[in-house]
Amino acid sequence: MYRDLAAAELASRLGTDRAPVLIDVREPEDYADWSIPGARNVPLGHLAARIDEIPLEVEVVTVCASGNRSALAAEVLSRAGRRVANLAGGMVAWGGVYDSVTIELDGLRVVQIRRRGKGCLSYLVGTGGEAFAVDPSTDLAIYLDLVDEHGWRIARVFDTHLHADHLSGARRLADATGASLHLNPADSFGFPYRPLGDGDRFELPGGVTFGVAAVHAPGHTRGSTVFLVGEGVILSGDTLFVDGVGRPDLADEAEAFAHGLYDTLQRKLLTRPEDSLVLPAHYGDSVEVRPDQPVGAALGDLRAGLEVLGLDEAAFVAWASGSVSARPPNYAAIVAANMGRPSAPLADLRLLELGPNRCSVSP
Image 1 (cartoon, rainbow, N blue to C red):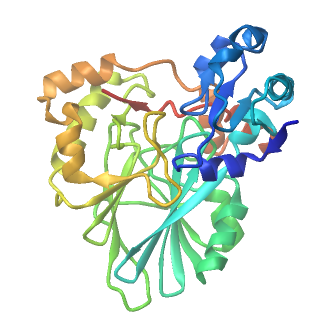
Image 2 (cartoon, one colour):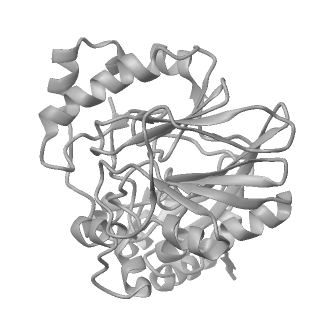
């Protein structure tokens, strides 16, 4: 017999010594387009012939699009003596799984919220009973539950840029909580908000003196923004990741935006202290996510580990503008919705989000 495994339980086990072996039984083209990091592809039609490849000593979790084909695979593996679970809801369920990790910094808390199936990262930065939200998704309950847990109210909501591969929940979260909404006017939005300016600072109460400074960081989008939290944390948005940098081609100006990205990285980010903690808005499949550790890295480690940060401007522009891949699926509809011009109800638009992070270029 096999059991059904909830996507949230799977997320809690990945990156630990309890991680199962993942067998994705979809067709190769579907697996190649989007899969859970570390999963092996053994299409359902090939499973019986490849049964010896499936280990006996650890639990196996079967994966498909919605949990139906993987249930058939789980039955086959169970009869073959494997200890097996079926991922309930498949990749659709995986696309909606969140977890979080809290970083304590001298009285300041930064909560990193990870949307595991999308590789999306958002943040609550709080102290003294108030919090700022950065890059929230449309799953508002995640953020409302967390602020209740920490004893905060959300005072301000920010987006680091006009998102292209997932729906922004910033406006909805601001409306739900009465918080003010702050966006970069270099990107286009068709609804009221408070425009960010270079060097703006915002203060949180609670006895800890720190600010959040908005730094215009063109390169990924025209209105990309980096937030500096106190002296030691960089919320880098889609400008700098732990495994790459933001792709510069989404506005059809790849070379010009690559020059802007180089300038932002070299003159605005890499000049910060080396021990600054970089917390990005996305991560790729090569990044291991652990339940007890944030996705992030010291700026000095990124400078040393990402060779592209050592390139001169001409070489960087040639690499960044020449390394991009296909645009995120449903790009136009998602961008239009995030600008305030949705083409369908929210429930329908949420289906367009399914898929991996496609907002970075990596070495």
